[in-house]
Image (cartoon, rainbow, N blue to C red; front, side, top):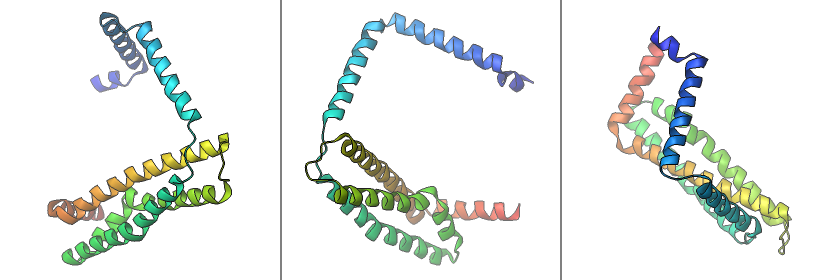
Length: 183
């Protein structure tokens, strides 16, 4: 019954209101008022203006495509080789299937290929003296895609390291799959 009260809309609204009043009171105590918020907005808008007027050089596209091609050509096959050797060690294909079902394993290749295609298209279709808004938008999208793909790649490597070096983790994964199979 106590948990049912916590889930009601009235309780949640009251909690949100109380937290808001408390945060407002604390901000008032620390004198973080309108002036500091105005300074924050001024700085934030100046950063956005700098980003808008910054024209990314066209050369970074080659770097992005080369890095992502190396990841596809070397890191992905080597990681699958490592996982298949682990599967052979434990004489179970469940580990390979489990690794391939990880979201980083599934989406990394898609993200890499999509960003390479976007990079090559930009490099091919955009002129050398491009300073237009479309170029800026696509260049920033490419750069953001590169950063996101790099983060996913680092997560992929961290997960691969768990599979390769932590025997207890691998055994727990096998036991979890066995439990789910027998349920």
